Length: 544
Image 1: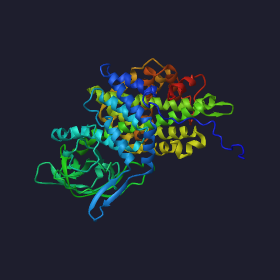
Image 2: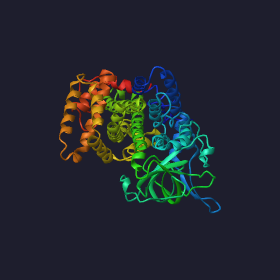
Image 3: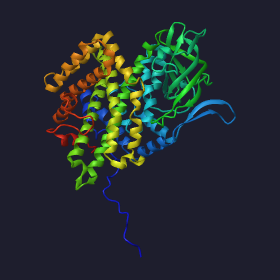
Image 4: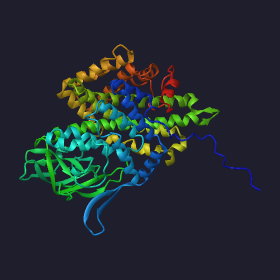
């Protein structure tokens, strides 16, 4: 006779699956509405909702886990001993990457509201499996660099903005779509790309070269082509390196090893050697940094978007869990201290979303004022949003208690991914120094940022005071390099505050200004001051 059950499962939240990741994110939906013209808004909403439903499906969550648990492998030689230098991925990774390409996540540059819709889609997609975001980002970001050579742009841009994913390595001219990677950093230089030693020797055919050297980090090494920097006779120059030559032969692209990374494990990052590698010059000799800077700026915005996506998913999972989980006589979400933690996390997530989408809208505008705004706001946003990602995801995992430390919860994957965007495309100090460079060389950039911030003047006294403090920092430029992080942090916070005061619900703006700008906040999350409507903030963050 069977005894009583000892394993009745109760008090467990249902899976966060089968929902629309886009429409469940109120802050993101409102940002898209705000920055999209009425003539295409319905089209954009429909497109993003379709992507959101896919992103929130149990099927894609399963693919994401499979891709993460089965990282890529390097196949240097075939069975006969021929050098092939290929990267082998799990089928789930190819399925996910194909979904991202078909959703238009590489095609922002020629569509109406292209950057806003693509940014929102990228933020949604980062919540599925961030490993596929790297090739999507590199391919999207290569377009402005290639436009330095109209002939190259005409040849490659239709392939890069295609919605067809073709994984086969064959001449790009025979493919309906292509992906791009990037190789800039070297062992001895890292972020100091001018210290690169890779040499480019001109060939008889104009604009063609042979490259010899190495790259310490090559992003997306399975791609069809790469933008790389090398030393030509006139100095550091940008080059396009195809993986397969037009005649079908493999270019010399020697993959030495794949990096064993903390997170982002489904994506390959490689060390590559060039030894007589054929390349086509992009832009003029000696202007490599100027040529590739458009790509760098676009990928930095993607770092901010990716971190905003990770934060949103972490917060969504934390709020979802606490909505259903009971402890100490009630729902966790109704406990005042837990509500304080969740609201604090939600503020960080919404502020990141608002600023990242504002930058995407500036790309769509394309005017001189908006270009100046981007010059300063992109590195500031990249610095601050990516810095906030790790503490947010760690705190959100803690909201699940011990369950948040277990792989099945999905939170550890977010935690491992969370530091990545702060490191890639220039770590924190690089971004801070880039802001200083813009302040010194391009006064119009500061004017544009102050104009944006000033649109909220008089709406909140704490924001006004924070702006005055920023002016004080800007007025004292003696020894400013040592204070660069402090300055950039303040700039990013007042930009976020200005956006929330103008566009977010009053309870969100009030809580943000009181804590982030008014100084009424502790050193950890869950230390918001009393007197705020925290329940409204948490309710807004709940994934419905």
